[in-house]
Length: 258
Ligand code: COA
Image 1 (cartoon, helix red, strand yellow):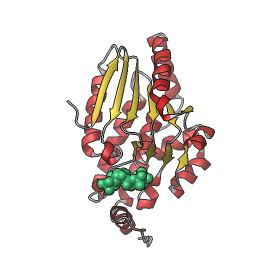
Image 2: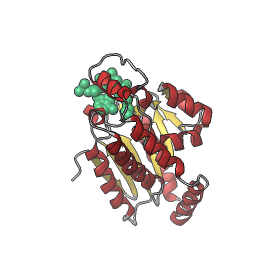
Image 3: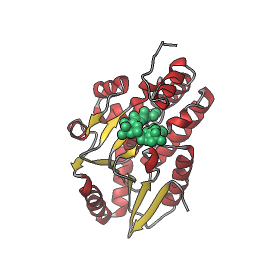
């Protein structure tokens, strides 16, 4: 029924796999549309106790926004798309049940932002995390500038966002970006074990506890709006055109600050 997602239920545990392995599960419009649809299904599912989110293949959780689609992303699309994705990721953050991200490889850009919207992150030893948007001449737009500093602190978040450098699983664990690191072949078993443990806890207590913890992060929400508009602005620059073209042409980008 979905083209870019695989959804299965094992008892009261939902297992959602983002499934575009040939494109490292990059977030295409089709994928995020389907994700929104799937979330509607999860939100209506009274029997669901916990959701596990992972990527298909052994290389990537999600390698970010689909860079092919970025070619056409001007300011209008930049604002509209980030607003939509912020809403979808907020629905994940606010889902009535906890969501575990089982990060099985690269979690970059929108992939990192998606993992950040989940309640708990665990990863495989080969996982790598990064916010490479700046290298494409743009900035994160799917909530990363807001959630990353809250999770790992302002200084570390700024270093990741301003350099675009990746960090490996061990460093991600050290700075609190992920709760656990396990060998790749054990990742789903570990995620399932944690999910089963939480699924056995009283559902209402789990729901209320999650709600209360999330509300500890409440602010006016203005940071998200600013992020989305600045992302839109970055989509209008020559540097963005150059960064995206250089990636697709497999060459080094020449940025001019325009
Ligand atoms: N969007 C679209 N396609 C992507 C993609 C993305 N975000 N990330 C990877 N792909 C595609 C590549 O273009 C390539 O496709 P091709 O085989 O048709 O050429 C395929 O996935 C494999 O990627 P490749 O770069 O060959 O693999 P690698 O192992 O050398 O490098 C990454 C892996 C993830 C480090 C590298 O692909 C990368 O830097 N991706 C972009 C990450 C990014 O900037 N994301 C943020 C976007 S805002």
